[in-house]
Image 1 (tube, rainbow, N blue to C red):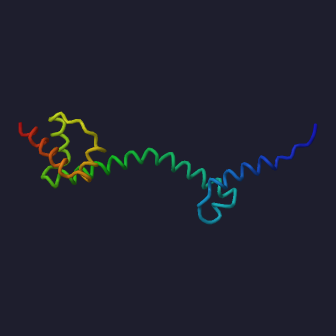
Image 2: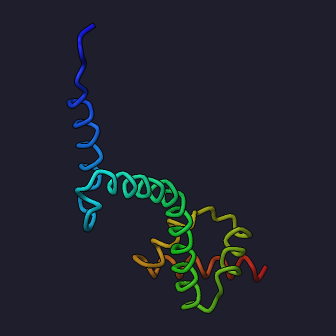
Length: 119
């Protein structure tokens, strides 16, 4: 049986980790043993924050809708209730976009919600 030197595979594995650690500060970017820890932690953060991003965007949309509704004299909860009563089915992402980019259209939605609640 011939002798197998494993330098090529080891070097490839090290290079893969060092490449993933590009942009890190200090020894985290060029010392393999430290880079492994940093890259693994970074992957944990990425996994966690892919889920947190959905929460953060929903919170942002709700804040924008609330701000737009309050300009017209309504709160977020009464506005959303009014939309449900009126049978208007727009998701929060679209409503937030309307509140920011199309204030006149959003104001008409607020008026429709108020009218539905008044009935």
